[in-house]
Length: 265
Length: 315
Image (cartoon, rainbow over all chains, first blue to last red; front, side, top):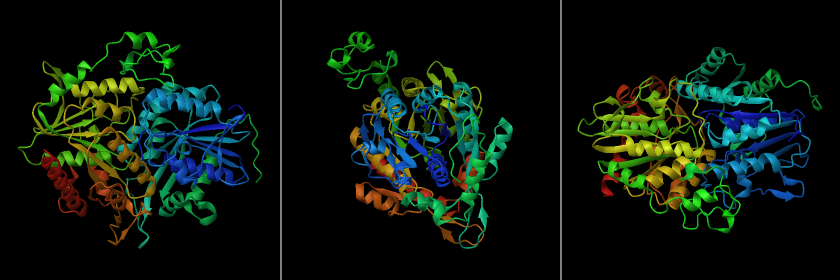
């Protein structure tokens, strides 16, 4: 853990707002611009990361130095760990109560051999319960950068994110900022932009709570297709607004500045 | 029992309810050993109380989905609104999403509190025949986080079942959080002897959601909960400007209908995306009443009628 320069937790109170999409796109983008990245999925009952990274049928191997992450390609710039890699059949439910989930998470934090990497992005399930308490407690021992909160613009989602802010405050976990996902859908027939889940909620919330607003991600069916098929969205759609948004998120981060990063371009 | 443990159970824990509890090889050295060895065995006395309380509730419907944000709470609330449109039908809506309760907001009951009477906890009423219970009513402020581990969540779910005075109900709709963990195991375990009608499983069309839903269906099969059927939510978007349909969440693997066939469970129908549904939820109003002629309302009603039919025929 201490060989990892930046540790970022991706949180949201509500489910289905795009935590896994944000986590995986962020990881892909960071490795795309030259960093070494790890992506850890602590959603034990509904892991989506392997599917989104196109790594569905992969297995984790154990070495003397611990678990070896599954790498997206031979350059080993992006390593992934998810419980899915430990399950034989992908339809098998993980029917575990809290204590068992907690010990799994502790193993994920302590026993994975990530090597020397620049970023570890941690994707979480929705809520403020066992997984979140455990991963935060473990992570706080290793000086994390903090949490990125993901929300959609509608009021129901915002109210769950407020809970997540209270969670971060109670756990003393710094908040890096808020990302508003699914901010409007552009009709492919007439290019009219509709705010399916209303708009601006995330931005207002950030202002209200005095948290940095990192930006908006529009609804982009191409992105979910790429997620589904595990294709690199950036090389496929180099001019997309999603890519522009990700770039501005990364530019907006206030990384713990004491460390120098090893970006090559 | 499990709420008395002082440390997480070891890997090969025989289970706190088991006959071997406190005695198996894995128990040696476990800090809980003494607690487990001396705790009373046999059926949980609370389950008997729950059974008694649930005798006045005819049909109990669980709303489940593996993935979050696919519309469980929206579906549960619209189902409850729809059932209660018949004045003679008594409906209860129980929200067991402890960490992210959305039901109070969607039902227009934000800021309400529960009251305790001689008969137990009184639910909050939307109208005479529609009662609601949620952990949201127990919080002082909307933004308060419920930072609870499993055993505490199980405790409140048990209390909801044991202590809430629903009176006579025709339907109790139970909204759940995503996943297959504490909340789900507990509700099924606590209602085991109370005749759970079954589960409606909600999903969105894309494969990332269906992966989790397959797990949820296998969960139901494993723990013995009958599956009423699968609903595909957020299925297609009709542009308000040009009226043409497009798919936001694309069913790359055939969507929920094909998955239902593959897994041999009934498919109940699809509900299109309508920005007005999200708005109705934000405003706490019944979408079915405010938009009676929309396509989504038509689909909702078709699905609700199937559910009523299946539940009432299963007796």
